[in-house]
Image (cartoon, rainbow, N blue to C red):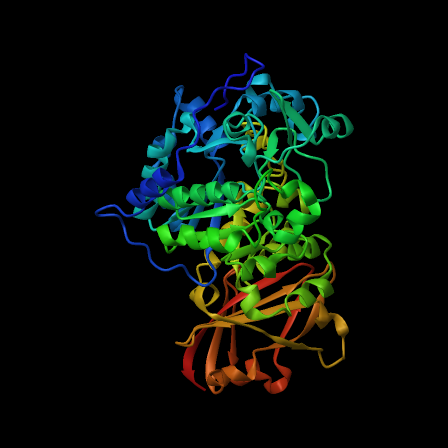
Length: 542
């Protein structure tokens, strides 16, 4: 799944089609006669990320032939849906080029997670894109459209990447539309060779953020040029006709103030006015005009989540929660969960993805891993699970390779997988998926033991009185105390409550008044990192 790299020159790829043709193609693609209708997403959708080139590479080896997206089995899609997922995210479907491949070969002896791999394992980064057409090795746009239709047939939405900040250094624009790429001078190249490169007689900037040097396989798009914004908006419209949503790489880099801080005067295109205003609102509006249900998911850092929500994003990464869980700091975790509920419903909760270390490597204790996952995936927002996380894989896959180790060499603790199996099944609980989320109150045992403060406790309920209570002892010590639901759930009073733990099948019976605070509340004693997801059913009046 790599493009050959015998020549050191840039490939002469065909230029991107005109904006008008892209829009027409998108409109023809988005609605097909007889297409399966999708149910509305739940309030807290569950997403499963797959690495396209790795999975198709494994299938090719198994079948001893080259496979495409058309060969990805319906049975696998059905399994994903039956496990409770709403969205499947195929990472890295777009066309890449020769320069990215050369960089990946160079990294084989440098990057820790690539050392020792053979040359044929190298593959261009999926974030150095030469054309927003599905990779020829994967079957092209037609195969991607058929995959979307097959996903719909199983009740799944298809998410793909959009990389707004940059293209590949060998993208046709460097030769055919150089005004769309951020330009520099010979002095820039001599002064900062790590941030600039030359094609012909023109000097261009590598894609970068405010804090680090450029990515050498990328070319920075100039968002000061109105024509560049129009081209990127048209690409989004095309994608909206092929898929159901995009995960937008480093989406905050498009915020107007960040563009200014990063590039300053270079944003002004020669001989014409500089574009002003935010890029995302009109771009999102345009894509949703093609496909009203099209999802925008922002990879986001630097506390820009709220900004991107305001600009139209449906969801934005919650890196703050990830970091606080990684620190194992229960106070910081609980503090983060005090944010406005409406804001929290638009966050993406994750313990790993293609950029982060594997959860099984970050939380080497499987009970810490489970405790962090229970917190992340039972609070409001989109819940993001990366393929291999649910199996306990611990080796991160570089974006510059097309393979991963065999599972028997990639799992330290076989006890992780059964824990995730139970958790993912529990996430199908209707209150957790579609209910109203509330904090539970906690209080000490009669002896005043302060260990109750280590509990992370919350609940979710539906309008038809389905109730689920989650309690996690996010600490390496035994903890005990009382837990109760908010007074707004007065409807549990006087009813026999049967609490079934979806993680262990343990059953506790209590009067509803106890859940509201009678006799101090529901008393629990939890072992280090122990978690409960109590599904509450009612056995009538007491």
